[in-house]
Length: 430
Image 1 (cartoon, rainbow, N blue to C red):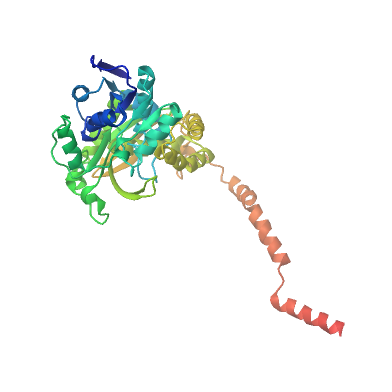
Image 2 (cartoon, rainbow, N blue to C red):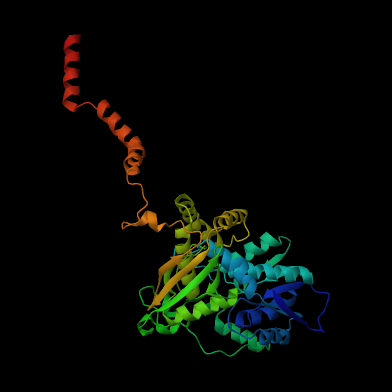
């Protein structure tokens, strides 16, 4: 984690401090003034870079000009990849088997860094710009409570429900400088692991997502006519190389986002169950995530035993739900992480993926830990399998079912015979 800090020398020390997750946008910019007016708090603005667009230095300068007594710019991309993305990749985390959790797994990291700054600055509160209808409020609040239960949490957008126009008027009335942006009909969130997009025409679930809602991926119809092949090297479940070249974690994801995105890979259109009980239509672009999860699963299929693979698959969805639901720091997730790490000891090898017009297809595999034996699998010359053993195996394997069937046959009496027996018994009694 790399951080830079600046402080406003005119700050009053008598007020309590609040650490604000600051994006530089309209909501969190007006929140600086609102926190001072509503709660009489000094705000420390914290910008955290997890791979989203924007100028971090410009953001903290804007925060100071609005009235923040302190401002931090933290480059957290490396920590995001190694401590959050890689663990979720090893667990093949896909919420409802569709969404790679790009936004969800960034929130606990941001919460952790906010807590770190709050402790450093002696702040009494942490504030964020999440609304009352979304998932992120839960992720922030629960993560902060898990790490620092003594800190208060303030969510201005939950208390102060205003339209965008009303917020702009408030900013003008209070001399809050806000960035002038081109009007956009969508609400988006971006980081290294993916881009989410919602609102506007996307709220009509019957309508195909317009092309202007996508930024990271080209339309599959406009993707190159020839496929692109990429080989990804893994060590203990973690991607370490592209086409045989060792690649740093952040750079590896950036390269795959670009490569897969150019081939139209990574588009997701999903009706999603939010924690607050609402079904929402979400679209995502997660090129690198889709490619890496497919490649990782394929390598696991090659090196894990059947029972280990089956059990791991059975808990991956539960793991995904914990991440989605803001339970990153829960004891259950920690216990599952320990199991997943153990399962990855032999997940080392190379996977070749074919990227072609919206699809990512695994087309080659190799591993020093492979359980695939061509001599046992082949039907050609060189077959090492002992064919005589099959009969004995099938006998033992099917013996329980054969036994059950035999018992059913001997205990079941024909209906006609049972009826005749009852008549004879009645005649004897007379």
